[in-house]
Length: 196
Image 1 (cartoon, one colour):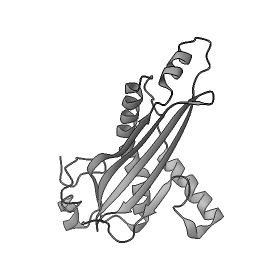
Image 2: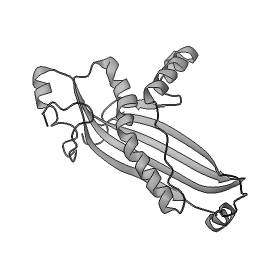
Image 3: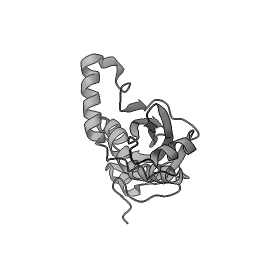
């Protein structure tokens, strides 16, 4: 693959926190972005009423379980050219008033971004990055729910671009000074975090 890899290109261990990607881009000042690492930060599965739930679900006249899914995206600067993006997914299934299962996943990626125009950093971190992470998080959720004894939970694709535009529109109308605080996610592009 070429050195100036497009978004969603090759992965490496991220040992250099985004300092060694797109060498050609740094020499030509061309924008470049890459996935440096992907990882599970937190994974939790609760099956508090398993025996009761499976017994109720075996009855053909039993109501279908309800499902509530919440997704949130957060991003923060880790270095001059490195950003961590977290995709948080919470899914809860209820059978009547009882919780059948609850799964929570925080799936993250370390992204390198060099020479991106200022107005493209936020859309890259809150739209493109979660779009890249989502298929991997979706598989982890499906496998975890399946391993808990249920049919795999196959999350529908998410329109991160539409959510971003909707959020920016509602934030601009409500309170322009509080961007990044509503629905889609949070963005912390202040001082670098950690050792990067």
